[in-house]
Amino acid sequence: MSEKKAILTLEHVSKEYTGSAKLFKKAPPSVKAVSDVSFSVNEGETFGIVGESGCGKTTLGKCIVRLHPPTAGKMWYDDDGRKLDLMQLDQDESFRLRQKLQIIFQDPYASLNPMHNILEAFDEPLRVHKLGSREQRREKIAEMLREVNLQPDYMYRYPGEFSGGQRQRICIAKALAMQPRLIVCDEPVSALDVSIQAQIMNLMRRLQRDYKLTYVFIAHDLSVVQYMSDRIAVMYLGKVVEISKSEGLHTDYKHPYTESLLSAVPIPIYGQKQKRIILEGDVPSPLHPPAGCKFHPRCRRCMEVCRHVEPTLRPVGTDGHMVACHLYHEPEEIPPKNE
Image 1 (cartoon, rainbow, N blue to C red):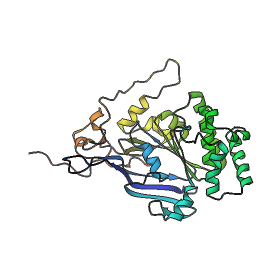
Image 2 (image 1 turned 180 degrees about the vertical axis):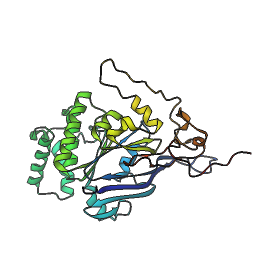
Image 3 (image 1 turned 135 degrees about the horizontal axis):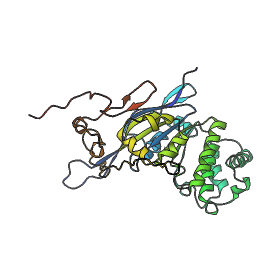
Image 4 (image 1 turned 180 degrees about the horizontal axis):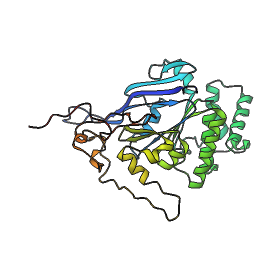
């Protein structure tokens, strides 16, 4: 059995936003939206990222496609055998890779210019990257619309003439027209009705098989992420707290935060219920994150070491499962006791 090849590798990636300086303040306030994130995405798989609103998952997705430059860390992309550092590319190499790294946003209407019809929206990036003649580009657009179950003559219509589900199909087709290898899907179904969500997810899975795509699938709904993903990373307050295979997460979770997320997923069996775990308190402010483990103020299994030492993401078991929790690892540094 051949070893899986990583198409994307993140090493200690962080993204910090610095505000404007205030009077009588020594330093401007800063927010670490993403803090020391490391993982790899294998070619052809769907790597899910899940967490509460504000946990940094969307910022991380934008860092991957370089819409937001990371503050620190390394991002490596496997370009047909060449390992490229995405943070050290020159202008020409960066422009070429724009074609191979695409993103689908949460709001399909905001992703399309209401003043341009679908033909104009598709044609501009194809023309900029010199992907065929004018007639070839038009044929490509018609082909992509058919792939997402839309009529080719829809290319002459404007975004306001479509429903939300149709607009998201158009955004998927637009990303696919660039012939990418990796697509970051930022909450692609969260703004849609449940029945339309299922159609879009099944469409994306079919396109992944047909075009040999790799997805980074971001969502706050754990049941959606489990359906789409091969592996899942759970984020909390800018950090990855657990990485697990999708099929084993429901029964072999480790982190208390993952347990609370799973307890909120409805069971689709009449009469069967599961105990909800209600987290106490609010999500801490990223401007003033707590010391030690970021989750400890809301954790029902909090220990004294959790208040002082931040756990690192380390393997647990032999199947690639990783968790950042003192329940499974001895802390690398013991805080000194107060006399």
